[in-house]
Image (cartoon, rainbow, N blue to C red; front, side, top):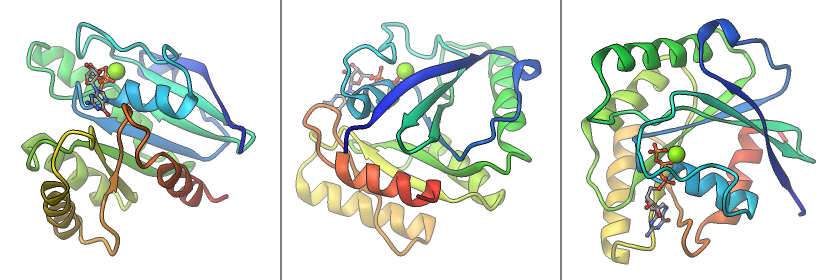
Length: 193
Ligand code: GTP
Ligand code: MG
């Protein structure tokens, strides 16, 4: 299918949040996990989402509209950037919380997880938080071009046990395009297409 992804809205503060009357899937993940690269790969464009040389700099929510499907991918600011101040972290958490809680159009949160790393504390906190709100988690192991197949399979099993899901996490590589079609299918499934 010929899909397009356009950035239609950027939000920096809670007071800018407004109800978007269309299905939404949020993208979340630690800084540097490959979120922007994933958006660019799905969009088939190199520079739609900025791949920043300064990780964790962006503190905005970016709304990308997927057409002709008609749902939104909402890129949440990366978390866990060591150099950001406590005040910034609190502001980030409050913005995310305001976006997530009570948003009936939010169908799932795609949590991006670095395929090269064992489950990290911040990843467990985020997935726990989202599951606690009864919002489905779509786990995606990014940079899947890096580890060996056996290591990937182990990590998939580990995350599947943690999240207690009947399917293993998706494998994705922005570099090779691995897992792209499966991710589209999964997003569409949760967006209610
Ligand atoms: P922040 O915006 O800082 O939170 O980071 P991000 O999650 O958007 O990560 P970004 O897409 O900017 O990528 C971070 C680094 O990982 C860059 O150097 C990318 O080139 C690299 N990277 C992203 N995806 C992949 C991938 O699939 N494979 C490999 N090998 N490298 C990747
Ligand atoms: Mg980014």
